[in-house]
Length: 137
Image 1 (tube, rainbow, N blue to C red):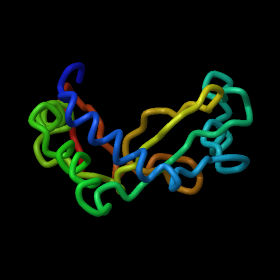
Image 2 (cartoon, rainbow, N blue to C red):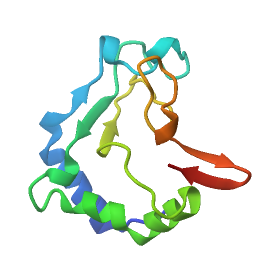
Image 3 (cartoon, rainbow, N blue to C red):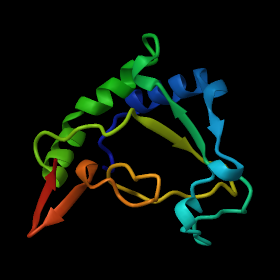
Image 4 (tube, one colour):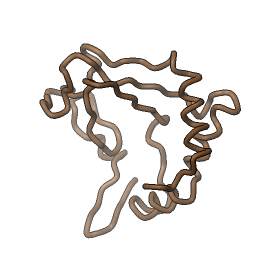
C-alpha cells in the first residue's frame, strides 16, 4: 500500500532487521523454492544458484525490535485492505516471514495457505474468491 507507512516505522523495521541480519537463512540447493514440487520456473529461477533469504521470529524479538512488526499487523491501512480482500476475521496461516533478496536471488510466487507434501493446495487453509466474494475457512 504505497505511502501507508511513515518514515519512522520503516526506519525502525529496517533497524530491527539489520540488528538480526545474522539470522537470515539462504535457501540453497533443495531448499530453493522456484522448483518446488516439480513446478520449475525459469522466470523465478534468478541466476540458478542464489536462493532467497528468509528470516522469522520478528514478533518474538525483544523490544524495541519486535514493535514495528507488531504495529504492521494492526496498521489501519493494512487491516482495512485485508478486511476488503479476504473478509473480516483474516488470520495468519503461519508465523510471519521476512523474505530478502540479493541480485540473482530466485523469486517466489504469491500463494494462499499452505501446500501439501504433494504440492497441491491445502484447501482448508486457502483464501479464495467465489462469485465475487472472498472466502476463507
